[in-house]
Image 1 (cartoon, helix red, strand yellow):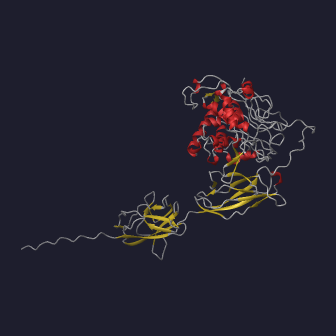
Image 2 (cartoon, one colour):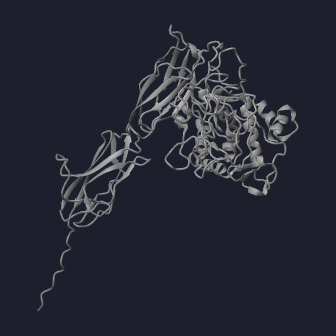
Image 3 (tube, one colour):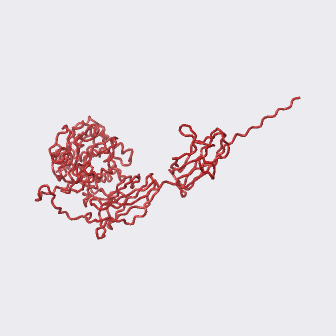
Length: 588
């Protein structure tokens, strides 16, 4: 029934609530797409990505389901639209979402609310994408841990009617070492999963076939670039970055609106399966990329096919699909089993021979600061001519916590008219050392161009006490005042700077003293050197309480910071002054 309803909607149900959403989405379809400008924000695109840049999206613009919500749109019982109305909602089974799948979406929303609160990710958006990509994990065919029963593998992205993406994972995820395919309930291509994958169920593994992992990864993917999904423009941008097709955008928005009006939990394996696929064929509801008859949701576990076997549920038949609404080419006279010669004219990407540095200066920054310079890369032909409108992917690699602005480690930028792509600004993390930013051409295999960036540790050049109170103590007692200092660097507050404090023997002998004042460790034992200290956000460092043994005299506490700042503080241990004894008068 859902298939017939979907067809009715596409043909002319303009007076329904769902169709109204689609029309509104169509009117606003000129939305930002998947690639970014020099600031790391997406650039405008309202149609599938040009130049074969399908691997610039989460799914590689692979096939998706085009079934639309039924006409009898749900009505929330509470008026909140939160979707927590459970079984009190009656009506079409389309409203129901399998229990484990629904739980994964809601847990992902909760996690993103904590890690990226400004994104305002609604779990209903994940549900809408999950519906369009895999029919909610093929109607909720998942085990108790959320892993799909049998892999969900999209069509082989071999260029036969859709994008061509050569293998990037050696077949680890998609069982194909020649071409890539989108995998899992949220249909990530392997190259995107490599950096976007998350561990959503806490088992230590990032598995695209696990709905908890895939849902959390999809949430992070949609929240990159500091998008605010409560903003209509940002919402469209995020959806188009997942699959760069206006038809895809409209379909997802329809399901988003539908789920926002109310939904409920249903048992795993009993979800309604979609039927219509974006390449114009009619599927069987077994998962993206399948053309073979499929089982009902309660069928026993199936696995993906291997050479010589018939395709199983959720598996793609090589060369059988489309993507982003692109129709499958008509049959040719080419012999069976061979790929027909390409008649597509060369794109700008096809002419790129190599990448050149476009004047990038030295990349250095202090931990926690933004890099003052940006990376500039130029795409050139073999003859050295610049190439415009080419997507350059910048990827941060190495042992570092540095990111691009917005917190991501991957950014894609389109070359300008002069053939230059400028990467978003780099933001240094707290880890000092060198790392690499690698520039590659999206959709073409040419040698990568590597840039070395250096993060230096936070430093201070001046230390000063925050007060001038004398630090004194009696033998065997404790100092009433704690030592507090403030660090600055070139006159500015030096926050989070590493420091060391040592009680030294003298100004000329900086070895650790073996008598006099001391600190106490966690066990109450005397220690005279403290490491792993750091100033706070205001550049202030307060040392622990000091104690004195029975030795009297003047002692030195030496504090040093990374960057060369040094301060020596005097400590005095002296016996208390004795009071005079009252004299007695002589007696008569």
